[in-house]
Image (cartoon, rainbow, N blue to C red; front, side):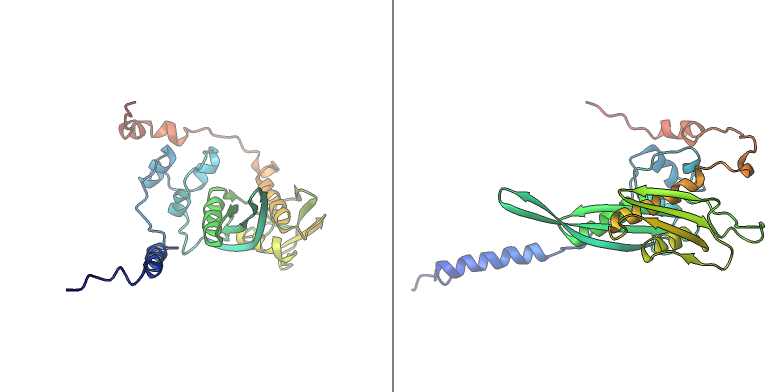
Length: 261
């Protein structure tokens, strides 16, 4: 009776174990299981129970959004909310072991109807950087106010006034344009303006616009200032109402869990 072979030699045994680890490592790589959303913030609980009907209620009371699923409830991500990767650039850090390379992703999201967001994220892998940047862009969504160039005929089509945004050496100025002029801008701010729902606008850019990160951030800052300028049509007296936390305080207290330390 012959003794069993020692796994066809020690060298082949090591190779077999290596291939086994590789198979286990490849299994499920890149697949993210989407679990049911369990909100952990007060705002998330209110949104999941349909206590808030519009996204503007969050902007009106300046409530901090900590979960990207809140935006998915108001603006469905695969349908109305669109996203686009503006740029993926490698960044390096010098360490004692050499250079560590990571990937930085710039992502823009918007629904084309007055809501736009910008996300920037660094990660070791490109897919992880893009996925995280999309989530950050949803958390940073801001309302964009639109207005008219002349008579108030039809739907708002341009920015309500001249606004300027700056990041680094790049300065972007948005100027109202007549209906039919289109978006007169470079490709980078043009994509951001399209996602914001602006149809006609003139732009003026100063600085090193080749730096795409600063260019897109300056445009995003300019769009955020559209609601910061108080025009005469917003001079109506403000009717103060309760914020969602105060209005639904009984619901929030009923669902609160006591944590024992």
